[in-house]
Structures are given as C-alpha cells and as structure tokens.
Length: 400
Image (cartoon, rainbow, N blue to C red; front, side, top):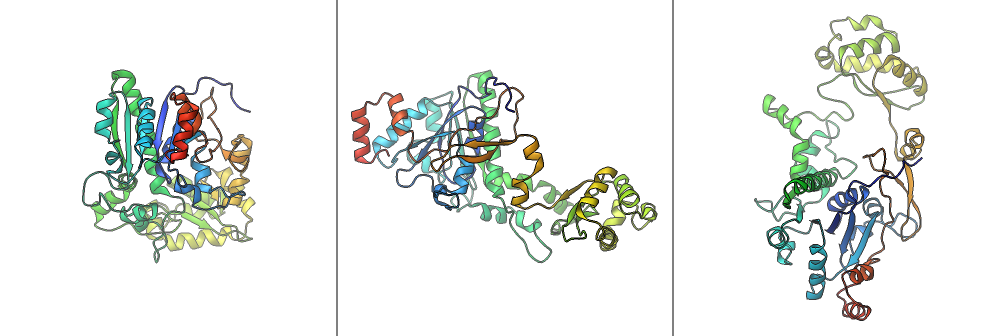
C-alpha cells in the first residue's frame, strides 16, 4: 500500500535536461522520481536516440527509453535554428538545474556552456556529463558504456580466467548517472545555504575509476592485476556457486571464520573441517581454494536447492539463488514489499519498479513516459507563446 503523501523532497525544483542515451537520462529520472519537474529537450528528428535502441516493448517503445524517462515532459527543439536556441534559453532561465550530455564542447558552441550560463544565472546549477571530461588527451574520444568499462579496467577484473567480459548492465552509464544525481542534490543543498549555483562536471571514466579503487590498491601493493574469478572472489573462500541435486546452483559467500564453522558444522555435516589447519582460516582456504570448492560441492550436490537454502539460512550462512530476469520479475521480495507500479506510456500502461530511495511519507512519482514532443505546445504556452506563434514555429521546423 502506498504511504500517505507528504511533500515530495524535490517538489518545486525544475530541471531542464538536454540529454540522450543512458547516463544523463538516468540522473534526471531520479530527480523526477523525487518530485522535480524535468523538461527533457529532444531533437525534432527522432528525439533521444535511445527511443530506437530497440523496439522490444509491444507497440515499438524501446526498453532503455522506458526505463529512463518516466515522469518527464518532452519538448522537441531544433537547436540548429536560432528560434530553437532562444526557446531553450528561456527554459534554462526558469530552471534550477540544467543537465546536459552532448559531446564535449557542443553545449558551449550552442551558447549553453557552464561559464556563460552561470554568468547569466548565478543561482543555476549546471551539470555537464561526458565520457572523459572537458580536458585531457581523451577529451574528444567516443565513450560508450562498453568502451569505458574497458578503458577504466573494469573488464580486466570481470569474467573468467580465460575471458574478460563487460557487466551485463550499463554500469559506466549508471555510475555516472548516480554521481550526477548526487552532485545535483549536493549543489541544491549548498545553494539553499549560500544562494549560489554551481558548475558540476561528471564523467563516465571518473565514475568507473572510482569504483575500481580497491582493485587499484591491490595492484599498487602487489604489482599484480587482481585475477578474474567468475562468480568467485580472489581474496575470499568459499565464495562461489555450488551445485544442487537438480542443477540449480546456489551461491555461498563466507565472510569470516565463524561463518565457515557454521557452514561445515550445521549445513554440510563435516564439523572436522572447522578446525582443520588447511581450512580453518580464510587465508588457508584461499590457498586451498580448489579443495574447499570440491568438499563443498560434494556435499551440496546431494541436496535440493530449497533444502540447501533452508539449511544455510538457519545456520546464518550468506547465500543467494542464481536468478535470471524471469526470476527477478517473479521475485517474492518485490511482490511482498509492494514494489511494482504501473506507468503510462505512448504504447499503454507498463510495469515499473519503485526506485530504491523510499521515503516513509511520500511515494516516488511514477508518471508516464512521454511521446516525442508531447509537451512542446504546453511548455511554449507556459512561456507566453500564443497559438499562432507556436504554429509558425512548428511549420518552420523549429519545434515538433
């Protein structure tokens, strides 16, 4: 059941987002989730190209776009035309936050660089997102999720010993979007204290480099790249997937020696392993990882997944089932906690999961996904444009 509706935390905040793809739309959608008004500025000729990444949703809506763009208003402008740029300038003048992820330097060439905007609007928060940043030898290098995962070293620690792999979700985009979101919140808090806006830069590369810090510390200390260990962990054992009677693997992650003792005593019925010097400490288990994994697999293979999970839970040993997306869609934790909602879209109602930030008194806004340019006329009218002027702009191609 939805909570009683208090004031959404970002109610009254207006965000103008000149955005496309994943990273910036993820940041602005989270601001919209918390109650901000997000005006999404799109190209007149097709809009955000994520609209057409795929057409897997019945009716032709792209899955990325559906995920990232609920609760926004779509305004379609041709920024190559003076009239389109003038409208965007008027929108920015009404905004608290201007967020953009065009190619480096493109916003400035259009007249929407951070320095210029901050000079005109001292309270404005400008967030510039890019792959590698506004300076440095990689400034103009193409930066898509897979490319940044590779360049920042994430693929070097992900995969099997034989094969590096990228993460299945677009982690470089998600990481940058999260930092842009939190940067916007921090800038809004500071503005509330000082009255001053901010210029904030967030890059995909910096975001993933931050997430690689532990691995970099390990390399600096040892001179070696952490080995890829599939589901396992190079510094912890046991920490892997183990078989059950009907081929449904269960992940077991023992974090300390107490949990090891609980695993072998209460789950595997091999209490002698708790004190065996080959296995009693984590460092010993890491040295003897193959033996550890063999001993556990021999015991778990005779149990059903349900029996193994029950015994692990009763013993307090960390574990998880390996779900695919079918399993996640049907996951009892989402159902029991009432995390599913419906959002409108150009192709009808779609299911969506409530965002992770849960306020006790104010449910996240779960507004519809906009059609391209759906709100152009309404927003122009709000800016004071009359019907004849709007018709003229549409006829000239400046808006759609």
